[in-house]
Image 1: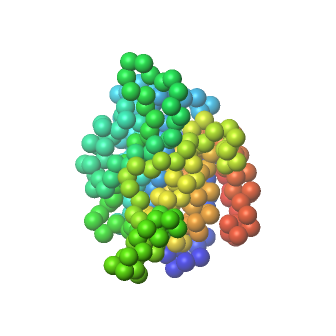
Image 2: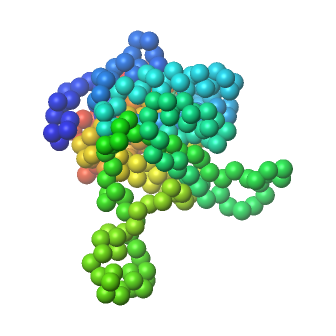
Image 3: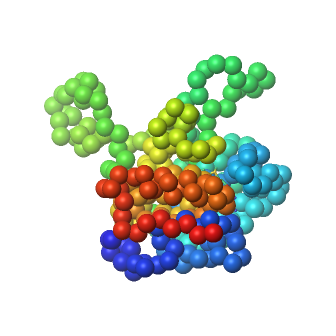
Length: 276
Ligand SMILES: C[S@@+](CC[C@H](N)C(=O)[O-])C[C@H]1O[C@@H](n2cnc3c(N)ncnc32)[C@H](O)[C@@H]1O
């Protein structure tokens, strides 16, 4: 365990997913000490009526926006002063939510996750929507951000094309270029090896980039809406700690299975414990 988390050793909330409402009055986010989290990755219900085995995505727009403000105000104090937040949203609600968040944090980026939806059919009275909107926010100007950890390597052909002497030794050529704010990563289809039984599971490639860029090694990632546990799996694979919540007990079991299935190199001493 790194010095970043030495002080948290033995904390009952670390490397643990609580199978309960993140806003529970008898647990929930209150379990986590203020100022103890490096990064929050939040992938809440989008307010589009999805079935998560509960009514969490069945609120009307006004109630959804009020609920969003409620969990944001419960969760933000958990971040360290140099911590940051990525929030997955749909374009339908992101404008209002970004305005609300900008009253509390500094907006760093709007990231477009292009889900690489194939070009067949689609909407006929508007443009087909094929992206999710991700807000990247920081608590302060000196927020943690490790660009080198997420550079995208050039392929051999591109490197060769840039082999003129002025480029030799250039860091960006050797280590790769900075990711842009449009991320083209296929959504998970049934046949993807990574796919679990959850309707809105996010790809590890997307979540791991957030973890590597915005949480120091050995740091802590909080996800209030774990779903199939992508954030927990990404954190463990990247050598970070995690904590979070999930309402649906079937998904809590899925999280346990996904963590158990990680190669031993990705297992750490503390087994995941889910708590009813
Ligand atoms: C969009 S999904 C998260 C998907 C996840 N990122 C993944 O990759 O699998 C949202 C999840 O939040 C859960 N949820 C909804 N309201 C909740 C609440 N108040 N507390 C904890 N979990 C909640 C839902 O059951 C659902 O699984």
